[in-house]
Image 1: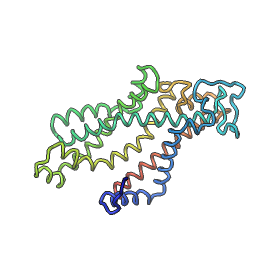
Image 2: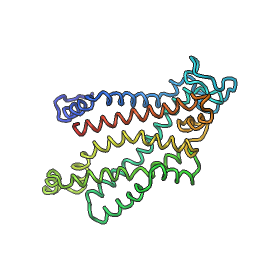
Image 3: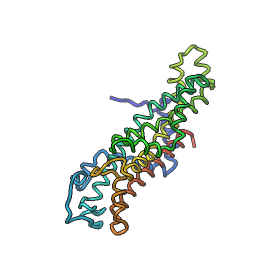
Image 4: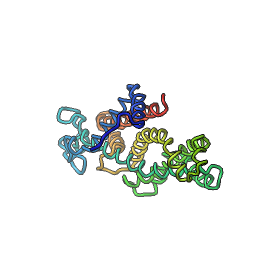
Length: 290
C-alpha cells in the first residue's frame, strides 16, 4: 500500500509546481491534447472504426468518398477510411517521438553534464566541438542527407533523426551545468569531500530536470514534424503504412477535388504539435516560477 505524506517537502513542491502549471488555461489544454494523443496511440486498434484499412486494403467501389457518417474523414484513392488511417498515424508519430527521444535524451544529458562539470578541459573541448559540428547543420537537412543514403523506412528515419538530435540536449545541459557548478551548494559539497559523481548526479543533475523536461515536451512536436517531412518526400515510412506525412503527400496529388485525403492528416499533425507545444510552455512556466 502506497501512503503519500501530504506534508512532505516533495509533496508541497509538487503542489506548488502544479499550481503554477494550472494557472495558464492553455497549459491544461495542451495537457488534455497530449493525453488524448497518447490514448489514441495506445488504443488505436480499438478506437479506429476500420482497423483493417491501416494495412493492405483496397475497395475501389468506395474510393474518394467524401466525409459522411460512415466515413467521417472520407476515403482515399484505394477506398480506405481516412479517419482510421489518421488514428493509426497518431501511433506511428508517437512511436517515432518516443524512440527518438529515448535514444537521444540520456546520452545528450550525460555528455552535457560531464562537459559542463569539466569546463575548459580537453573533455569539454572534445564533447562540445563534436556537438557543435552536428548543430551547425540544420536538423532537417542532416536527416534528409542520412535518409537519402539508406533504404527508406520508419526505422531508418528514426535512426537519422536520433543521430542529429542528441547535441541539442548536450548544449542545453552544458549551459545549465556551467552556470550551477560555481553555486554555493556545489562548493559546499566539494568542501565536505563529496565525489565528482555525487556532485554531478546528486547536486547538479536534479536542477537540470526543469529545462530538460520542457525541451522534451517541445521536441515531441519537432520530431513528429521532421518525421512527417521525411515521409512527405518519400524517405520515411512507406505505403501502405498509415504515416501522417505519407498521407499528406499522397493526398496532395488529388487536391483540390478530394481535399479530405490530405487535409485531415495535416490537421492531425498540427493538433499533436499544438498540444505538446502548449504543454511544454506550461512545464517551463511551472519550473521557472512564471
